[in-house]
Length: 96
Image (cartoon, rainbow, N blue to C red; front, side, top):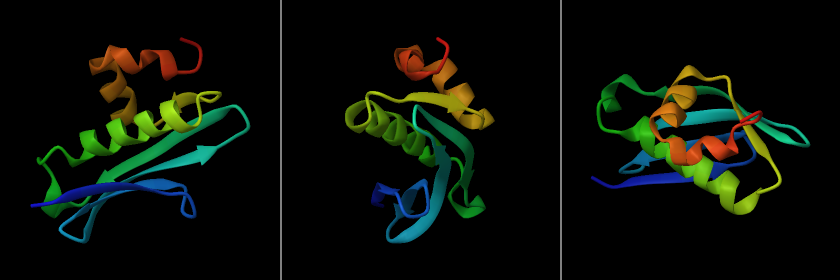
């Protein structure tokens, strides 16, 4: 099975596709200084495969690499929890 994670800037979200099928997404709102992650969702048929984690890692790596001037606000509980379990990403969080 092939997992591909991409940034869909038109819809303000990161998307994960498993074998060409949308498996999940991480939505955000973009401000002048912040990226606010609002919601992460994995389709029930794809749960338990690490897709949510892959989405968050890709999204945060993308912010770090392509928008180093921005900080992250993890309103989404999944994103917040993921960052807490991966402290090497804590520097991205606004107010940290």
